[in-house]
Image 1 (tube, one colour):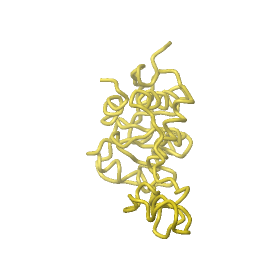
Image 2 (tube, helix red, strand yellow):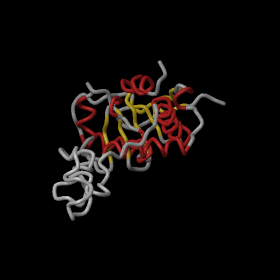
Image 3 (spheres, one colour):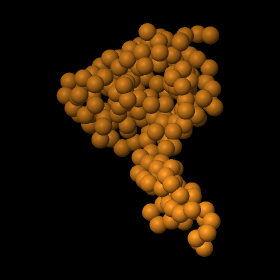
Length: 209
């Protein structure tokens, strides 16, 4: 299988050359079920879980029976933590933890698969020329010259402030840095633009060198 390639775009959005991509990151088999589980895990982790109620195991007190089992004329009770007591626990409490377990090896495999999907579809490009100063007009012109579908995901190095500011306010464009790049964002995007400075960091995040 030939090594995957991506066009290197100049500041005008025109291809200056083709860049060979790391086959271990951008040339792997895409496993949809693994990508799906990872996206589920990322969405679940983003849920705030703001509801807060106590089950009977979390309510204070109630270690001893409130009265003896027989002879009082009242119904038997085991603890004042029970749900029928005022101040007791809540029955069928809503979930506050939505965690979906996906281990690190699977996350990295899904990350590589999402990148490979863009490489195979030809929807990835590397931005060779940076922006000396912020220019939303220049960024929009670059996107138009490249000619790929939106939404677009732009991955820039943290110190590329001019590049980040140029793209971040454009419609249907999401800008992120390699350390915060997630599989769900790669799946959401129809096209992917990575700066040369960020490419090595993306490959490192994928678990390769």
